[in-house]
Length: 215
Image (cartoon, rainbow, N blue to C red; front, side, top):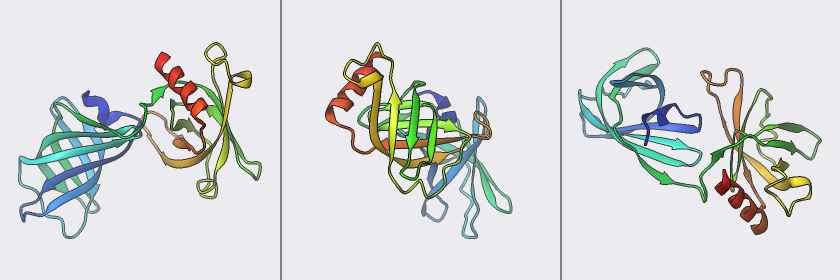
């Protein structure tokens, strides 16, 4: 897999896993701060029990995305502690293993959508990507915690020339909030929201599969 998976907007979590000098296995949640042709720099939270790993300590990076998990082996060159975090300097990944977590891979496609809740609150825009399991989209609108706990009705507009068994090329289904994330570099001031389809019929799922195959 490409090295720039670390800079993908689909990332939900990154873990750095290694064995410290006392023989304890550590699994640290980290964020990518900088990457060049030779090294990556990750920041993790500092705790009082932190023990600095030895130089060239073997480690594993696990990158969780909306589609699955990417894994790779690296070495920790160095680590520096500040008041509230630890900066890890690691080698550039040479290759990645991928574990698929979804029935189908998400594909980037911009399709108009509307989301409506029972009390009348609505969100609309264009999808960032689409899978048979749900959609994601970037928006400046805020979704309060109230709407993150209840289902909604999602209407998706697909191209008329590819859909023959939906009225007006629209797919309407129940959906539910999954998670959100921010990326200040690519989408400043916006959030990426991920919604899953809750009660998608077999016929609807087949139409989406055929549509995604053609992209």
